[in-house]
Every structure is written in structure tokens, then in C-alpha cells.
Image (cartoon, rainbow over all chains, first blue to last red; front, side, top):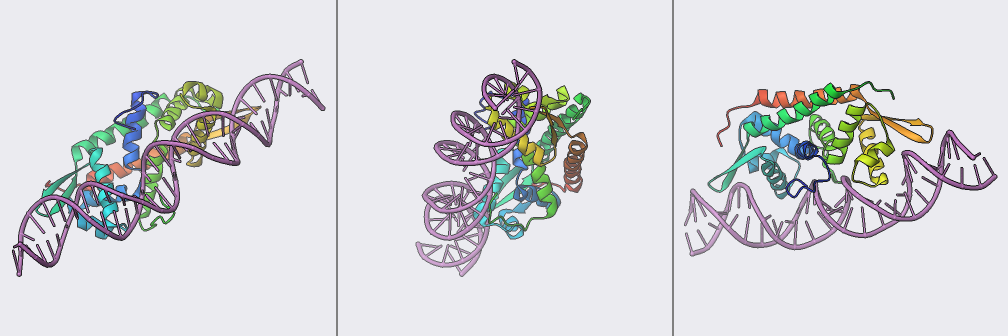
Length: 111
Length: 111
DNA sequence: ATCGTATATCGTAGATTTACGATAAAAGAA
DNA sequence: TTCTTTTATCGTAAATCTACGATATACGAT
């Protein structure tokens, strides 16, 4: 949906949708919150925190990594993860910008 | 999500995920942008704008209506839609709040 | 009442998402 | 080496999402 984007919709709509999609599952939201609070976690820490199997957590981590919101580095047999704050703030800026633009272009609603 | 959905995530994660999910498809983002710009549209206007069948547009409208982001009123044989700005701003406030909290709780990242 | 228009809903096919267990790979310890 | 730990990936089942055509409904017009 994001990489081979069929250009049926304006580009900006794909950008917003892609960011939103990354946040559209409570597990991914929680992973981000946990990483933000702790600075970094190994995969196992997150598995203990979440009511999900290890493979499922790994899957969500992969999804977050693919949109760039988190980074992972290998640490011996473990994997350390942390939020990529540069990307996070950039994405959040885009989302906020979009919301502000929406509100700014707001015309009188009559229904 | 699953039916065997683990409802073990913190409440706030569901709230963010639900809002994000509503914005996770370019068609829904575009509908919101179109409504914001024009103030109101009948369903047919949106169908002409979007590269989608009438029934599909109706489905996306229903999804947006269910989370409260838009309202629809019957106007003769048509349906007028508009953004519910009160809800929109409330939701956007929550999203922004969450982002700010994330950035605020940010600890040093070492990976 | 009948016709035409506009839209919601139904039924459904196909793609994607989410979940899990099993397994493979990688690294340190014994 | 072999064993253990940790994590990514594979295979897959079930649920959900997205899309469409067909149909039902509602309303205005004739």
C-alpha cells in the first residue's frame, strides 16, 4: 500500500494513512510507549510486557521498523530496540500539520 | 484485530489505535480533506471524486461516521455529510497529547 | 401510482492483518 | 564440540478489510 502506491489518491493521503496505520494497533502503540519510557528494550522485555506470543511481538516490531519509527540493533544473541526520535517527530509533525491544515481549511458546517 | 483479541492492553492504547485506524486508509483521509474544504458534500460528490464504487465510498463513510469524525443528515433522497469538528478536534487533541507525552517521556536512546 | 434518482445495505471474493507454534539462525557458555 | 538462550522467520489459520455488483429503500417528480 505504501511502497508500490497505486496513484489513485493524492500523495498526501498515502503519507497520512501510512503513519496512521503504524499506530492502528494497540500492541504497536504500547511498544512505542514502553520504548519511550525505558529508552531501550530487548525483544524479550517487550514479550513479557505484552499479552502476545514472542513471534507476534517480533512481527509488530518489524512493522514499526519498516515505517522507521523504531530501530533495532543486534546485541549478542539479543536485539535491542529503541524509538527513532528523529523519524517519530517528523511523522508526528506531518500528522499535526495535516490536522492543523484540516482545521484551517474548515468551512462552515451546515449539517 | 482478532476475536480472540487480547484485551490486556492499557486503555489509552486502544483509544490511540482507534483514532489512527480511522485515518489508516487514503480514501478516508481524502474524504475528510474534501469535506473540510467544501464544508459539506452529498455522497455522490464524493463518489465522483474518488476512484471507488459508490458502495465502497458508502462503506468508508460509515466507518468515519462510526468513530464520530463525520456526521450525515438525510436531505431528500440524498445524504449530506460534514466533518464533526468538535470530535475531530477532540481526537486530534488526544493524538497530539499522546505524541507530546511520548516525546516528553523520552529517555536517552542508546541504539 | 409509477418512474427515476440517490444512497445504504447485502452478499461475497480476494487481500491483508493478526495470531500462534515450530523452526532456523546466531551467539555465549559449558 | 554441544547445550542454552534469544530472536527472526516460516507456515498457517482465523479474522478483518476492501472492493464490487446487485438490491432494497426512500424520496421527488410526473
